[in-house]
Length: 481
Image (cartoon, rainbow, N blue to C red; front, side):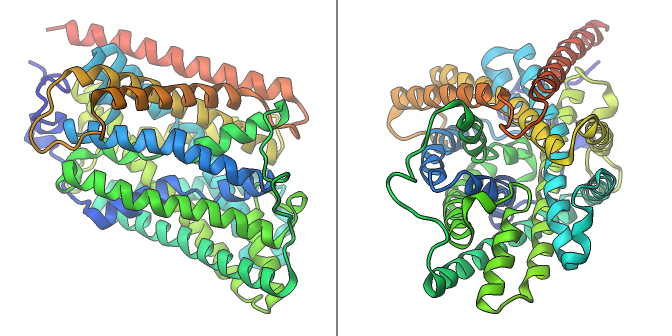
């Protein structure tokens, strides 16, 4: 006899069908705010925005209104209606059934495979500023970037196996590591502006964004930068009073994230002309340049260390959240029962975590194959966007369909009623589709555009096909008495 399917009872989480797989409630309001900040406020997008010039400020506002607001409001309602472990997996199952639930979880889970190497590459690039000019010689070394990525992944894995009680501190420190460099960058940018004037001209002409082919990738990437609000919902059973805590934390974190992106971008452009900003090293470039100009050169290495910590915190946060997808799929028996096991001492889905880390190692190696460090980074970014955003289409569709169900007392729902909720989800789905299409277009600086597009499409097809195959195997497993 096997366990009941996920979502078969909306008042019972998938993890509570069996006391042996009961996770611990370890995340409070403050922890969740920190989690959202480190999962969404990615320091690697700030220099990317600055490299596009002042027009990126308008794109940030567009992203806030068309991605983050629809996403956050939909998650507020869905996580309040169905606060169980599994997040989008549970919501999609409730709306469309087993296949949609599995594919939503599978596609979103696979998004971590290119995500982790991309974030770790960014952390590795900034880590070299800790050693000053002596370490800059290895900026183009694939060996260094691969080795750093493996170390960072191993650290996040070890802390998360021990449990969210310990692992959450990596996320909390990562959030601090994200905010301190941004705050310092804002202070330094303001001082440099006051003493020496702006390095970039902010005029209506320079701030007008372009929709030509060369800028489509910039639009897609900056809109994607607001994704991540859905991540904590996968750990619903590990959040204290999830129905109330998630909405409140999203509001506070959303304000902090928007301020960080906009003011961080302005500060880099105040210190450096856009043609001198690197998408891999831009924050440290701006901090180092501004610090030297105002006589604070000693802060550079400390900030580099904090940026590394921020990105390692992001890796730890997503590793924890995404491992809960194969965990609940294992409980449903769509994956082998081993995925549903929790560690006897720490109460964590250790098998799901280990398998996820091993798959990430494979992507670290595949992403580097036949490419420069920068080229590998851009391919990983594009792959992350595609695999991460496709499940949003399932989620927004579930939001629309689930409006038919009655709202229980105490549930937080989108203001404006069902009509506004449907319009909001439709806007989110349309924007998400546009970002997915834009992410396929290679970076203008990529020397082998055909290879880059081919790798993105081929890896995406393999991941989607793998999900269909695993579901078919899982259905046969469930049909066996």
